[in-house]
Image (cartoon, rainbow, N blue to C red):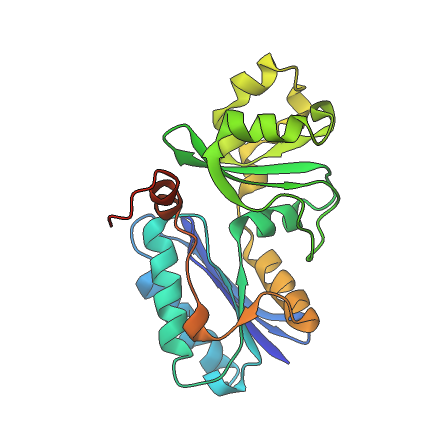
Length: 234
C-alpha cells in the first residue's frame, strides 16, 4: 500500500511517501512566497526514485487548511492535476485535526488558529484525539465567543490552549485564570508532514475523510468570515 502525503498550507511544505505505514521518503522545504515549484519537484523526484506512477498510489493525503490562502490553493491545484485522470481516493484533513493529532497526549484541548479581525478558526477536543470525535465542529468566531461556548461544557482550568489564536489571546486567557503552562508554545502548533502521512494512513484504513479529487475543497479562513457576515460577494 502506497500513500503520498502533501502539505503547503504554511511556510513549510512537505511531501512524504509511505509504504504500509513505513516512511520511504520525506522531503520538506521552506517557501515564504510560492510553494508550486518545490511541491512539483519533490513529488516527482520521490515518485521517480521508487519507480512509481500516480496510479500505483492507493491514496493521497492532503491538508486542506485552514492556513495560507495561497498555500492551500497551491496544494489543492497540484493534487487535482496529479489525480485528475485517476480514481485515487483523497484523504482530506483539516489543520485543526492534524494539530490535535500531533498533540494527542494532551486533553482536553482547544485548537485555535488566528483568523484575524479578532476571530479564530477553532475546534475543541474534550478527550484525547479520536478520528471520529465530534465534540464541537470547526467554526470561525470571535475568541471570546469560543471561550464562552466552552465554559458551559467543561472546567476551563483543565483545558490546554494550542495555536496562533491562543497565543494572540494569551493575555485574555491569563485574565480568566488560565495557567501559563496551559497555553502551549507556538512551536507546538507547527504542522508536521510526517504526522500528516501517519494520520492519512490511519484514515485510509478506517475509510474516514475519503473522497474523490472532484470533492477536494480548501478551508479558507476568508470564506468563513464572509459567510458569517452574510456577505456572498467574492
